Image (tube, rainbow, N blue to C red; front, side, top):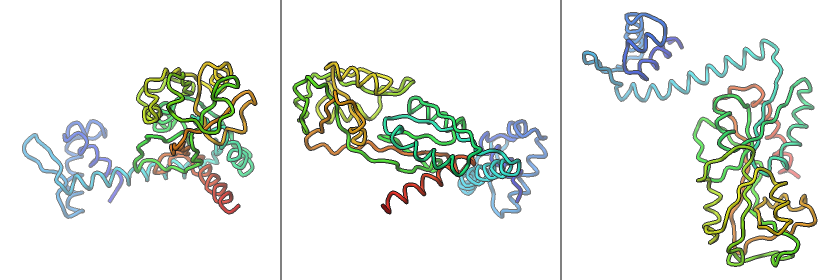
Length: 300
């Protein structure tokens, strides 16, 4: 079995047309038809049903196509990584970040990565969560660190949990909520909620507003801001409230008061994400660093 035949097969399976597949693979139609025929003889089962101009996958062919997609993707990724190693390519890391916990989690990982690979360049890119996911899919980034609330991942991604924090709120020093440890949702009715969403526009249907709805705050005004600095200044002025991960509480200015919601169990979970099968040498090694650091933290 050759990977060339797999490529021909997947092209016919995608187009269900030998002429279009031949054009895509830059071969004659007769050649690709002959390759598929020999492939079926080699496998011992039919891949396609042929009826005049119509072509359709057999049930076995449909299953085989799904499996071959993963095999071919893994093969291409392995070739890419092996070529990078053979060429002595540096393990340059392109890291995308979104969400408040990124600032708290990544410096230690990057410091460890640089100690192991001192020749590597490290570049950071901040943006909205959907923007980061799109850049990862397009292989413009090697690893992204994002909040995962409401995120549905499939077998094309590998995720490592970096943190799981209960959401807290910050308020200004001169508001009725200042100095309180716990506040009921009813006391937050009408408060403007400053929502930090990164450097690019996110879709309006993110799961976090559903969290506000569950608390009974669905009618509260929500103002989108790009950074926690913006949110903090507006909160200090007493203009509203903002959510933060619990781990950020000790890093805020003294002019901000932090409280929890009575009976609330919502957690802000932050993950590191990379593509599968591995397509980046840098992502592979950065994930190794993260795993080692997380394991060391668990032993402490």
